[in-house]
Image (cartoon, rainbow, N blue to C red; front, top):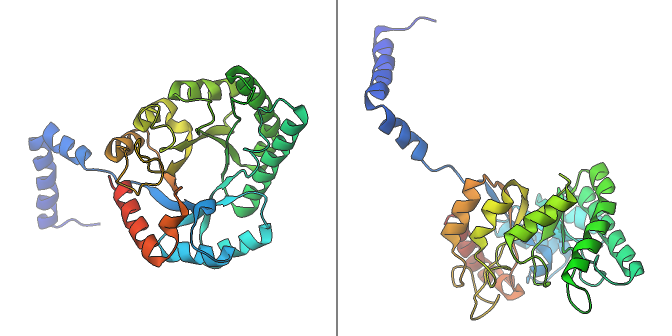
Amino acid sequence: MKTTRREFLQNTGIVLAGATLGAPFAAAAEAKPKERRLHKAIMYATIGYKGSVLEKFRAMKAAGFEGVEAMSHKNQDEVVKAYEETGLKCASVCCDTHWNKTLSHPDEKVREEGLEGLKQALRDAKRYGGSSVLLVPGVARNGVTYQQCWDRSIAEIRKAIPLAEELGVKIAVENVWNEFITTPEQAKSYLDEINSPQVGWHFDIGNMIKYNAPETWVPVLGKRILKLHIKEYSKAKGFGVKFMEGDNNWPAIMKELDKVGYAGWAITEQPGEQTKDEEALKDFTTRLDKVLAS
């Protein structure tokens, strides 16, 4: 290809300008903020909009969501139809049995039922096209010690790993108010002991703020964060507050997520009244956009 004199002078001028400006020029280019690659989704169990599965999905699509975190143990055909007709994606599947059939229960039979519940959630996720299952690993109360919760839940999770590998779906452990794992260091140690790339973390931003700042969890867990729950929390008023009215330091949280390169689903979990109708959804999504842009 021939290069004209004008093109040659323009190109060399750009190169010379860059060489003359040197490091400051390069630093300015690097300082340009990268586009945050977060996809908005909502936890199905927290949708306040009334109607069938399909009607709720349609309302979320209209509100600007890209995905829905489904609950396990539902009518698969009905859920699949809702995904297909709306074009929404499966952001995650929440195991519906992990609270009443805990993997830390003293009764071995109950733990077996909990394990089967986790396996069904993995199968549901596969059917819906989801890449992970949200799992509350156990509960350290009502006669169950912290160490018992640790040992029993890890033993049961390991039993589910072969199926997770076969299905290509990961197990994402969530931090919740279960008297278990309240620091990022404990979370890291828990995953280290399981020692499987098939198990990571479903980081709930609102749940741990009463114990420690959510932004301190991100650098410790790093790439092990598989999914996010975007949730507001106020130490004075609890979870009922709206986005930007609680105690989360969203700019600090987003900065840390950017540092570890998190990109993927940002799944909201909120009181149902905040998404009960079109007016409430408009306010909710406007606030959510501000959070994600912090």
